[in-house]
Amino acid sequence: MGTPARSAFCSPAGAPAVLDRLRRELCAAEAATGLTPDGGAALGLGISAIDGVLSGGLGCGALHEIAAAHETETAAATGFALALAARQALPSCESAARTGASAVSTRITGRYLLWIAEDFSLAENGAPYGPGLDGAGIAPERLITVTAARDRDVLWAMEEALRCRAVGVVIGEMRSRGIDQVMTRRLALAAAAGDTLGLLLRTTPHDEPSAAATRWIIGTAPSFPRAGGGDERSHGLGPPRLTARLVRNRRGHLGAWIVEWNSVEQRFELATHSEPLAGTAFDRPHRAAVA
Image (tube, rainbow, N blue to C red; front, side, top):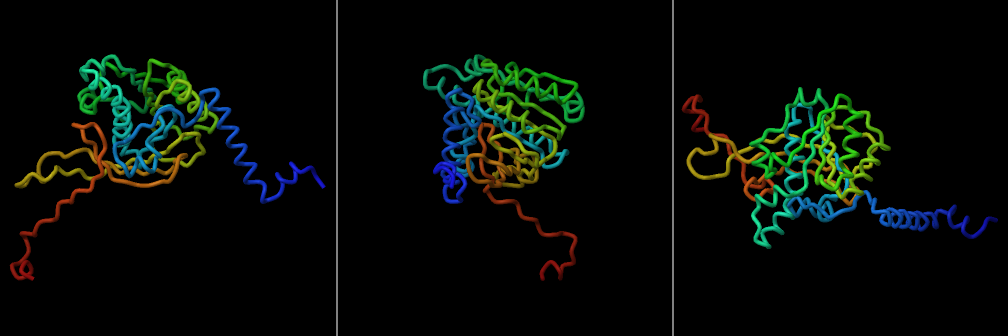
């Protein structure tokens, strides 16, 4: 016969209660140090269906992983990361609107966006484009780019930047798959300590253990201009459209959506409007066309 405490711990009926108590104690200990992995205010994507799955939005003081569905779709994953960074700046802009300050002055005095990437990754995928950043709502003068020769240097720079209060968002672009859970835990704790949004951008998906609060796989989707009469759908470019799959979520359920970026309101929208239909073939025989 063991002690009552040991018997409760060893019995199947008492184990869940003990685990729940340990979880509560761990959460309380992390909260006391300000290092909660999912801490910070929630960053809503602007879509109720996605924000509901995220329990209000992404944790700002946390680490999130974004991977391209294929290496050729790295630009789509990059656009998703930049859109999240732009959303991070919206609360300060909305506060400035209530106080009468201009949005431009708010952007200039806001926290910086730090982009850290490997040299080889920049050579393969290119650097952020100024007019594109401005269209996404990110002032180019608030962007600081850092290049590193090795992946471990990218991780070190990310950890240091995430603790800096002058930085609001840190994006680390990497090609390596060998990132252990200990390193992601360090990044998550650094993001919580600095109340900074950390985005680990990767060129291919992976299934390695991670301390990230969420993991996204982003791909491309056909983009169509909105209906406006005539043959507008066959000319020009429509809003950028992405496939977003949430494959890890410490706050709730998973999901998959097709979203597009509204550059005017600087938020995501579900791609729910109708797709264009194929026109009648003009090279078929008359009888086949009638049939």
